[in-house]
Length: 204
Ligand code: TMP
Image (cartoon, rainbow, N blue to C red; front, side):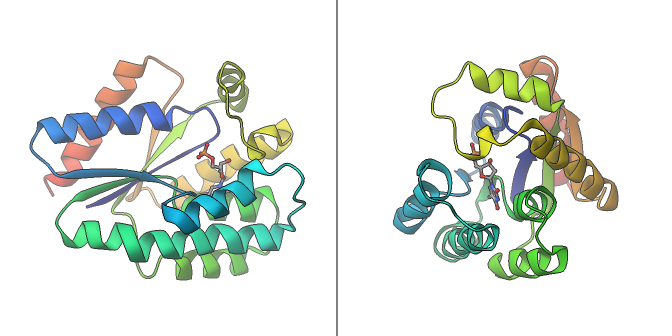
């Protein structure tokens, strides 16, 4: 089973995916936790280009291609083999991030973004996507307490507002796959809700 997590910066994906992984391991499932961008040797280089090198002025189209290049390698060499071995793969961000950040955030042509994002997933689609939804300002204020901020984190607040609205919009269009969880509250309560959604999905 392939599960993805999405959300604005500071929405708690790292914490919640980690807790979910431990919970599923305890229940006897084989679980792999991964994230985009940045898997493997190619992914690490791409992540550095995209998010760390402040002096690189990437064109939005080049940025789109790099996120997609990262995904192709990740899906082909890591995610698909793990799924074929029967594992549950939890991925922190996947092609909804591309649609939302490069399509709605950078305002690239939506059809082009959709096409490239879809192609980069090599036919793979998440069975379940958890959208951690919270006000942008709350997410950004959580980031302030953290080291290792990325170039994307430093975009203006209006950019992040577009991201949040786009996530809510795409979730309304695909309610069967994308489940919205209020991420503003208590970590444990949020995790409880995520667990019940995942268990329901696993029992189908
Ligand atoms: P993160 O690992 O801290 O979530 O940082 C990844 C950043 O990259 C985040 O700001 C979202 C952004 N991103 C895109 O813009 N497009 C994509 O396709 C993906 C996977 C991430």
